Length: 226
Image 1 (cartoon, rainbow, N blue to C red):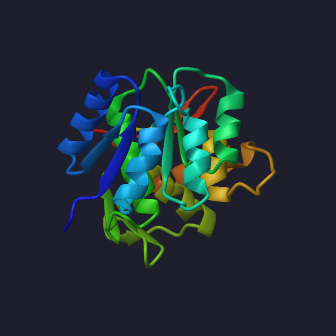
Image 2: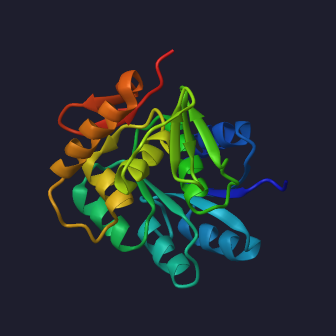
Image 3: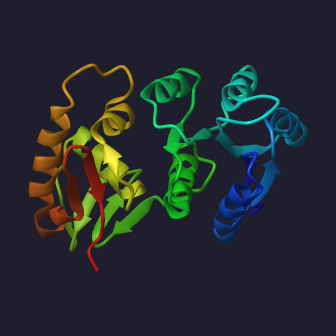
């Protein structure tokens, strides 16, 4: 299978090298650009880029400008990187069709995990139909969950919530992010509905419900216990 191409755009060479090293270790082909104009040129030269990791603050053309240019022609997944933790930046990113938004400094391992999760969602990576998460067998196609050979009866949203957790193992997920991805962006209800679904899901999973960790004041993280 041909390696998927990822374009890493950052004016700091050390940052590009750090991200490239971690992505190449996972089998990706990494292309680089050191400013916004070069990024746009490389994107149109290559044609088959699967995902873009894009810094906000850059010379010649900033990340927002790059995103606007690319979105005129393509829906390629984009992860934005920024040194600022400004909520307005994040909202602007989502309005421009950004798939993920990560503030610096960040863990390269978490970045790689998010790259994998996005590519699985967009079907660029061939996702396994049955995933084993610490003894929880999740059949994506059949919408079934089994533990020790026993079927676990889940509602549609409970299944979608568990699948989202499983595909983002080890990543801290805010309630807002969970709402956006499981209930979709057009859901305007109370984020506390997530807490209710998590409580029911934990109960149905029995002891393995402990894999769903609460991050107080933020959200949840799915972590398989050793």
